[in-house]
Length: 469
Image (cartoon, rainbow, N blue to C red; front, side, top):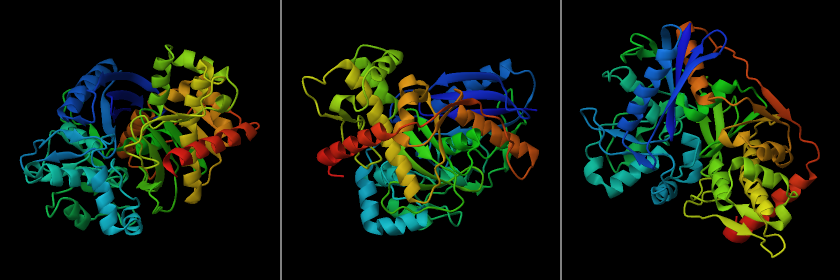
């Protein structure tokens, strides 16, 4: 049986045709999305049709099921005719930071964490809706329903039926959903929208058959419920207790499966649900792979060249510490921050040390995220390192000493799309649990982490000096 997994991410749509028995990818395709932090959702649908059409044309048989993993938090506001009211505000749009502060001040961080699992920051859907109500009331008045990006793409796949749906994982990232009860919190939604209460999609079980595809080439295929990108990646990796995933893409995400819901009133850990009926506490940063690409550009090299430079420098980069908040930051919550390089001297201002500081700075943020998960009770036995930046030899070599545990580097793959494909296979099978697919990769042992502790201490001092935290 062949299934189709879709990853509708910030930058592109990836489509994988997968053998449901083995997990082998038998065809794939990709189509780009426009840049920016607000996007017309029709661009996602154009890309999805292109990628799906190309992948299906290469497939060796009929597609039986399809599911969508999508970027979390994005605000897709529809009117009463199902048309988009305004361009979607994406997770990385930080304009709603003031509204996040206002919501937290009004309801209290402890109360919001207890009810929603998280303290809202500018990434969350609820803050974007509050921004809309405050800054574009004429648009807010037209909003009849709010969907998340994966909901909207799934709805298009089904031919825009009367019913819309979502899953527990992506719903738990809105800021108006309870992970513990599995119910929407309309009072919080109404409060954010200044008295308006738009409709929300039905929340389905993770292995539900949500509908049937209407798109030419996959007509009649079962549509799985879909999920958020981090939840899909966790499913694609087959995370078990003791596993922590560190994803180094456009953003950085650190997450681990859990049996109990978390409620971190500091706001560091978001208490999400996963795509299997469990929970997925998660820490997210706005800056990950872009730290390396930006530094490589400054040094007039590519990512391989940056890696070589970084590995030729000593741990600690000669005293340089980079706070890599190039686009503001979500964790720690510093939406207006910029990057800071500290400790510069005439002796240490070398390309090698700058490259090393960039890698160490990015990874120190991830190490802090791992510690935050530990503080919520998460068990950390190993780290699985994924995402574009995980392919860097310097990242792979430096990460174990900074994380303090062994690091597994799965073979490069589209794990969000693989997780969506696994969910599609699960929906078709009717089984109690999702299929088990092998994940191949290599292990980097931790060795002596003395230098890693020193690097993290220097990073912590620099952050305190610049931002007081």
